[in-house]
Amino acid sequence: MHELTLPLPADLREAVDDLADPPGLAACTSGGSPSAADRARAARDSDAPLALPLPADLREAVDDLADACGRGPEDIALEAVRAHVRGEGATVRAAAERLASPHAELLPRLGE
Image (cartoon, rainbow, N blue to C red; front, side):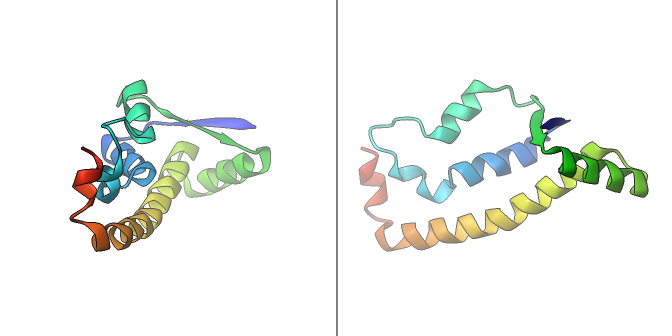
């Protein structure tokens, strides 16, 4: 594995955190216990870079593409992460809303 370290801007870090813990389901936690995403947020500094382990063949492909485009490999990887988060974010939000809406009035009570 070859690690590629990306600076992760705050807006993207927030979007990644939301994928791990969709906002629509926040009321589902019982007893106020922190979710996995809450624990992850607390465990890291918001300016900390993202270490992205890549298999050798993928790292080579990223390096080749970056070289061909006149960009850094970090830029190529960050663009790919943004595209993935946009796509998955929409899917996760839709699923969270679909699951939460039939029981919207009960969800706040689960957290009590």
